[in-house]
Length: 135
Image (cartoon, rainbow, N blue to C red; front, side, top):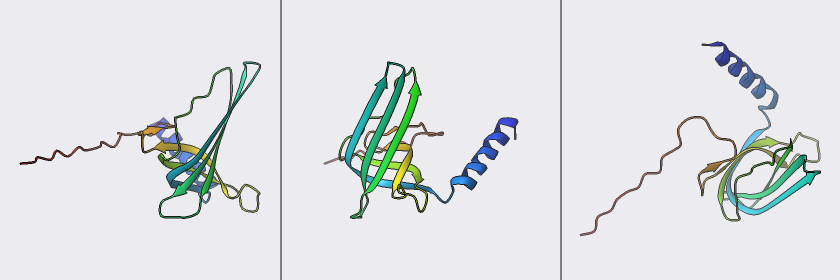
């Protein structure tokens, strides 16, 4: 195990120790998407995305929020539209706070278009095509 592996392992362990009880994921169809972009003096860029996701076989709706701020560069975000099937990974709000029902988005995987907000390590799952023959 090299030095970088040890640092990565230590970082992962401390992250799980700090946020382990708040980590969650939601998988389902997108009900609503709202994207707000703001630019201040062509220097400071803000992006706020609000997703409403209906999980599989459920009547409730999960509210997911992605906030990002960056200097000088415009922020990129994957294309998501209503009805897409997504997998949202994020953090629940702290208990006792007003945003405890919201999920802060860390990564989104659009299963309809096979795109990721943050690329995942490893190979992409291959879609197998089955050939059928009719006689």
